[in-house]
Structure formats: structure tokens, C-alpha cells
Image 1 (tube, rainbow, N blue to C red):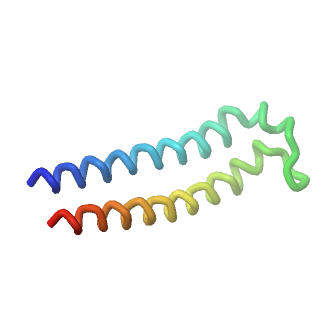
Image 2 (cartoon, rainbow, N blue to C red):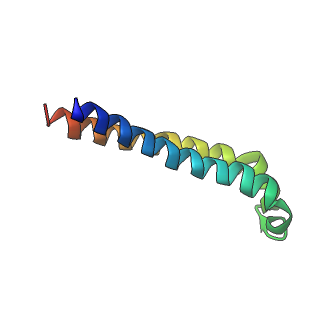
Length: 82
């Protein structure tokens, strides 16, 4: 029973951290800090625009793969404890 609670607690920790990163990138960089980031150009586009249109999606996809990696590692860890 303790293993299940630890597993779930770790899973929730991963979710909170990864979703916080995504929120920061999508909302923070794409909306709140857009004016400051628009002073920087990336590939001919303003960085704030890039984060709002492309960056948040790229970060989200990367975070999906990070979550898969973390959960596979967590699954292996708890599979060995049985």
C-alpha cells in the first residue's frame, strides 16, 4: 500500500512541475512577458510572438517526452520493489 502512495505522490509531483513549466512558458512568456521578449528577434520574428505561436507548443511536446521518460523510470523503480 505504501508503494502505491509513494508512486502516486511522485507522479503528481512530476505533473505539477511539468505543467508549471508549460504554464510559465505559454502564459508567462507568450502573454505576460511578450512586450519585453518582443525586443529580441528569433528567425525574423519577435521572441514574444514566437513563444505565443510556436514555443509553447514545442515546449509542450518536449514535456510530453520528458514525462514519458520520467514515468518509465518510475515504473521500473516500483516494478523492482514488488
